[in-house]
Every structure is written in C-alpha cells, then in structure tokens.
Image 1: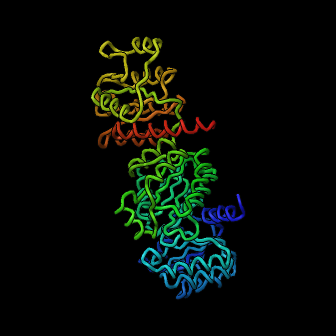
Image 2: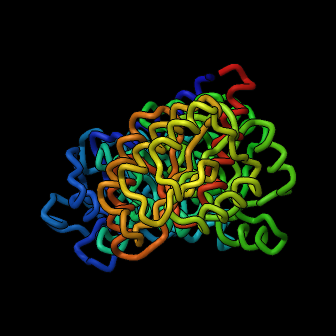
Image 3: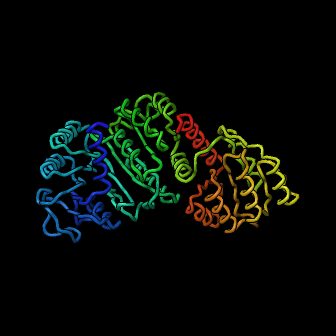
Length: 468
C-alpha cells in the first residue's frame, strides 16, 4: 500500500470512530438538515465530542455550545460534517483546512450533478491544499452502529437503523442506500458499516472497497455502483478483496437510458455494462440483478459457511412447494443429491409409511418437529449433501415454534449451509423473525433461496480455485 492509500484508509477510521465531530450547519430548526444530523448523533448515543457550527449561532444549539466557525472550537476535530448551501461550502472547507480537521463529509448537493462543475472543482483544490479527505458531496455520509456514528439526514422515526452485524453496504446513491438500510433492518440481519459517497470527488469506490476489505468488522461487502472512475485501480483492489470476503455488487445504469439517468444523478459515467460483467466474473464479484438479490445474497453470505459443491437437499412439509423448489434448483445450476443407502434406511425407519424416501423429501402436511429433527439430523450428515433447503409451511397442523427451534438448532450445529423457505402471514412471520434472529436466512420463495445458494456456490468455487 502506498502512502496515499494508507492515508485514505485512515481517513475512514476518523469517519467511523471519531473522537470529535463538528456539524457545520447544525441548527435548532427541525426543518434543517444539520438539525437532523445532530439529532441522530444524540439519539444513537454517540459518546465523543459534538460541536455544532452555524454562522448565525448565538449560545447553544440543541443544548450544546455552538460556534460561528470551526476555527472558534480551539480543539482537535476528527470529522467535519458539512450540511450548508453549496455556495457556502468552499469557505467552510477553507476553515476546516486551517483548523486541521482530519476528514470531511459533504452531504450538501448542488455541484456537478446539476452542472456546477467549477464549484465542485474548488472543493478538490481546497482538500489538496490542506491535505484532508472528502466524502461526497451530494451524499448521506456514514453510519456505524457499533461506534454510534450516524451522519444520515434521515430521522430515526422515518428509517429503521439496523442492528450491529457483519454486512457493510456502500452506495453511490443516497436514495438506494437509505432504502436498502431500511430493508436490512426489516430483514433482521446486521450492519457493520454504511457509506454513501455521492459524487465521489475524492474518496471513491476504490478507496471504500480497499477500506472495507481491510476492516475486521466487515464480513460481507455490498455495493451499489453507477460508475467507476479508476477502472484499473478498482480491478486491483477487487482482486485482493474477493480473496478475503464476498463482494456483492448491483450496477446501476446498465441500459443507455439508465446510464443517462446516472449521469444526471451523481455526475457518474456508467460505462459499458458488458465490461463490468466481465470484470465481476473474472475476479469473483457476485453480481446482483435486483435489490431483492442484494438483500437475499447478503444474508446468506453473512450467516452461512461456504459450500463444497452444488448438491442441495430439499425437505418440506408441502409437496407442491417442494416441486417448485426442485425447479428453482435446476434453473439456477444446482442439483438434488442422491442420499446414501444408510441415510435412506434411517429416514425410512423414522418416517411414517406415507412418506416417500427420496428427494425432495415430502414429510407430509402433518410433519412436526420430530420429523424435521430426524430429517435434518440424517441429511446434514450425509456426505453427498452440500446444503439443505428446508421448506416450512407454518399453516400446516404440525408446524409450530418447536419446528422453528429445530431449524435454529441444526442451523447452528450442522456445519453446512441451511436456508429456509416460509411464505405466509402474521403467524409465519413471527416464526421467521425467530429463525432469522438466530442467523437462519429465510426466504418467501424457492427462487429467491435458490438464487442465493447459487451465488454462494459460485463464490465458493472461486475461492477454492484460488487456493484460499
């Protein structure tokens, strides 16, 4: 790593674990972006020093001593969050430089994305002059549930904050970022870090990927990208990152119309999609086709071990759903295994006569926790099985919390990937929440589960082929 790369990685540490934060544009007015950002820091329990900065400040802002300029603080500031009109940002950045601020996040919009290229260029020159980094402009900034940092100008009552976890999500689009964050919180898996980088005039997707690849709290890296400015650098960083941990990317601007929209959105040049696809495939980047893929892939990589092959056993308490699941397996490059004779004999001895001992294993509509226990125990130990897809229809007579408990037990102990399909309403959702809180990825359709397992297989093969 060269000196510049090391400095940029360090700047993310100042963003994610700052000892002090100045919010330029903080206000007592709840309609102001700076008010929301300061309120978020207070709501999440940030333990460092907070310095509200507002040129019109007189006394206190939200109970904290306020300053007219960051130069008036007279203490070290690790991070400055800038939330003021675009025309005022250059002056504020000059003052950040003179105050020796470590790094800055500019959430303000109104730069190259609306044609103000010269104004944006001034920001770059100021950062180079004073040797500090910029995230943004035109972004949401960062969130780290563990260190309780939250620069999002979205109130906590409007968007749920995810619990602490292993998935880090970076997004060029603030709108996509906020929506996915809300969905992550709803899906129940945890977040390590969130980075919204907008116009990326300084810190960009290459720097973010490099940082997250090195971050010990990040298990899975997820990206929404519209365009990459430094293609060769991105490839080099991605090559190293995918050997360490999964990298899931959804690419915006894959059509001509979408590329045009991307440019007007974040001043991004979307580039040739076929070229991106080739790079993704060569370097083991997992391509998500939709936001559903993004979430479904994330939770299987976050919670499940890698796979040794593509053989997936299906167990179910509903025959029709088992048929649909079988189709989904084969449509996504997966296959049903042939159980060993020993496994089949054990299942035959434990199952009632109405159960046909073959995969998919339809345990009948009255299957209870005892049948699920036997099936999971025997099939998880079968050497011909690489993963299990368990279909649990909680609408049936025998499916209740004891079945969910069985799933949770084997998910924690069997050492192979286990995914669950459980479509349904409120009763089902209560059990889905139970299982997902224990690290079991649950899907509402066989297709979603099969696509997630296929992604897991492809990445597992990539890593195995690289000798890792």
